[in-house]
Image (tube, rainbow, N blue to C red; front, top):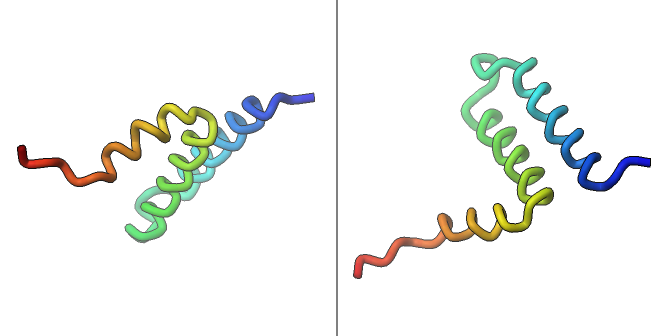
Length: 64
């Protein structure tokens, strides 16, 4: 039986391989962005600390 983390890593590896097989030149910018966002979603599910840190980039910077 695989651990949920192992399954997540397998999903991430498969998604990376799928993106590489598709070739960035064959994808529209929107499709490429969606695929990369999907990769980040998998990474964030594997490591909640990365998700927490990434959320810091979503906030506007203060100009103080």
